[in-house]
Length: 428
Image 1 (cartoon, helix red, strand yellow):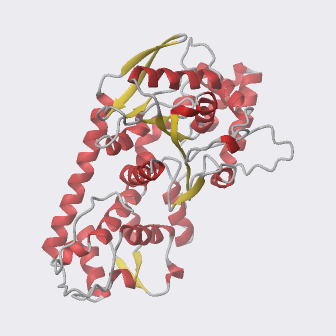
Image 2: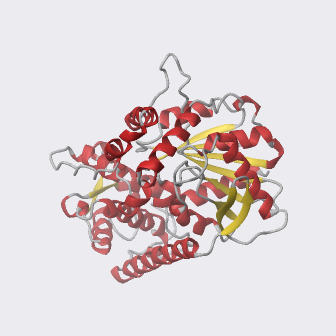
Image 3: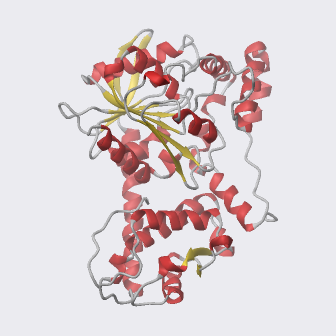
């Protein structure tokens, strides 16, 4: 599964037959370079030789052609023990997308000009997707009246009679920017809705979990939708569970995308927290107890990440690069810590959220559930989400290789294909 386009393979067309592999290399290189621009200037991309097997060219020759096209060094390997997480990500994408080396049909070696044409098309597809996401972000929001005021929400895609919308249930304290790329990827086939959860803006009343569920219901009513698919990020799953408990017939399926069911009512301390979650709870409790400390304490979460040490092993260095958030998200991810009043409100909401056992009614959920975690999610515990999947009667867990907490922004087409496939199966 890659973020590149799907293309039909023509027998004998060297570039077309290689398209899944080329997409995998392009997408991996783009994702890594966004975080570490000079990564491939000092490190090769190692790929299993069987992925580079091609009747018209040896693995070494094809590796050279691909490397020249994407301005990196590609090394064929037979022993994958030396492959880093970056290398494994590229290989997994190619294999998942259907690279089939050694086809029996006659093949010729791809020409450099053909590969260059593919690379230009890939770059244009990426730019077009970025423009689509920007248009969604720039569009005037829809609005619906809710208890306590008016809720602006972002909508994309055509509303079709009888087709349930996809509701992206956002994390507490966050805006909608992280969702725009995924909305653009889903909009051609789905009506997609999201909003910034209320309760942390200056002068607003505190919001409880039931209030967030009421906002979800209000948006559906404004859209004239009887039911929906819920895609819930980070703290969103608990809002979805509260909404589904009160309106079970209104939910077709649930996706918990890097979701958190963190519960502070765990006296045995058995929940698998991330260091971030433990530190954030300490911050929230301190700020709620003494709001005057907010100015001093919020700097704990607003500093620049430390540079990755060049002394790390190749494997550790690759892990740390993939674990970094996209630089473009810097200000967006700091929204909950943007000022003292926002942090105090956010801390109160989080403590209320953590006190709620979101899995208490998991056994009653009859709709299909998909839990998606990221290999390098250092915000919400992937281990907790995997354990949560076992609590639902009809759930499965899928881990995204090399992914962070923000896969909907980093890999929108990949996530969109995963969701679309799941929605289709949920309706069978």
